[in-house]
Amino acid sequence: MPSRKTRPHAASKPVEPSPGPPGAPGAVGAARPNVAQAGKPVLPSGPRVAAVILAAGKGVRLKSSRAKVLHEVAGRPVLDYVLDAVEQAGITDVYVVIGHEAETVKGRFSTRPVKWIPQPEQRGTADAVRCCEPALGTWPGEMIVLVGDDPLIRPETIQALLAAHRAEKATVTVVTGVVENASGYGRVVRDRKGHVEAIVEERDADAATKKIREINSGIYAFNARACFAHLRRVKPSASNGEYYLTEVVRLALAAKQRVVAYEAPDAAEVLGINTCADLAQAGRIIRQRIMDRHLANGVIVVDPASTYIEDGVIIGPETVILPYSVIHRGASIGSHCEVGPFAHLRNGARLSDHAEIGNFVEVKNTDVGSHTKAKHLTYLGDAVIGRNVNIGAGTITANYDGKRKNRTVIEDEASTGSGTVLVAPVKMGRGSSTGAGAIVTRGHDVAPGDTVVGVPARSMRGKGG
Ligand code: UD1
Ligand code: MG
Image (cartoon, rainbow, N blue to C red):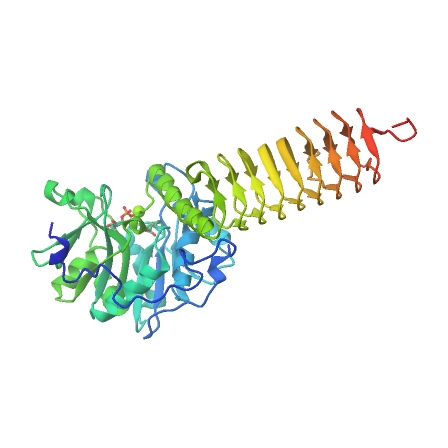
């Protein structure tokens, strides 16, 4: 394989690095989970650019009946990340090719301003792009094609791809990456001068080609019209009958058109999700990016390696996250809080400043007031908990009556004894308390300042208590 030096067309750095939008990964604060709407995208000036995302495949290698792009990493579907990257790169004309589970995919992304292109039969990546011809066949500018199974691609890289494509006046620019383990990917074959000579799929590669570690990311910039002209001439592959998009590279080269490789600055960006192992690896990388943002924002994560934080979690500075905590998308944590060890914060867990959630405590759809503590063995679900509340060990909000979820309200300064069960809907008034093992039954609200004990819990008032 040629060395890096012998790759005249492998811009290893963006040609004209556009500043990433403020909402781009790396720059975005964790306090802005809705990164898709953040910041003003910056795209190199020039003709309008369309993006085509290929998302019709089933994902046979995942051994799942679910569409591949709906599998989740760090709490969000794979395709969500690709759509974000395209949007943050500043591309507004977005076409998504769908086929397998098309209606479910569309439904899942119904709020996205994209055009859906059906691919009736999944006959390969070239066929998928060809399905866009009625919509984009006369598109005057460039078309960026992305695979829907690469959630790691960064908006800056899409912008740099376009800049490289324009600077090189190329017909095709392919994003490549040099990876440790290239198996499963198309290999980028270069000639002695470093020019792209071919892209060879693994199944069609000989032993020498398989040794190449520079892979095709599946992400390209095309001159749209030239691409469709070539696509009409793509024949099915001899090895599996699929129409390969990589054939466009061969046809462009045969037509003496310029084909350029743009090497992604970070090889992690070209990971395609084909297997469950890929899914797990993408999750690790994305969670590391998320973790880096929280650390940069002043969150004290004592052991990042044992802490699981999904995308879209808000955490204030000076909050300490202790090991083995799991924090899902949709949780938000104020500043100066303490979480963990072994805490589980689910969607809608909202901790105000200085709240403390300790070991084996699960919080879901619950407001936890400032300086409130729930330190041991507790479930808090569908509750509103005020300030300075002490939740005793083993307290449970019994929120589900078999039909619906009911609310528990615990007002400021209240406290629960160990092993209290609060059967919702129920309310504990300000400054009230329960004794150890109390079961407060539904609708039997505890009056402000009162103490209730026993099963079912009764007031201590009038009993010398
Ligand atoms: C493809 C590339 C390979 C590259 C790799 C990068 C081809 C022939 N191969 O291989 O060179 O290294 O991506 O990850 O292009 N899809 C459709 N319709 C289809 C087939 C696929 O929409 O008929 C979509 C899939 O949903 C997926 C994407 O295209 O999101 C790529 O398809 P996949 O089967 O994953 O291709 P790879 O084998 O990974
Ligand atoms: Mg793939």
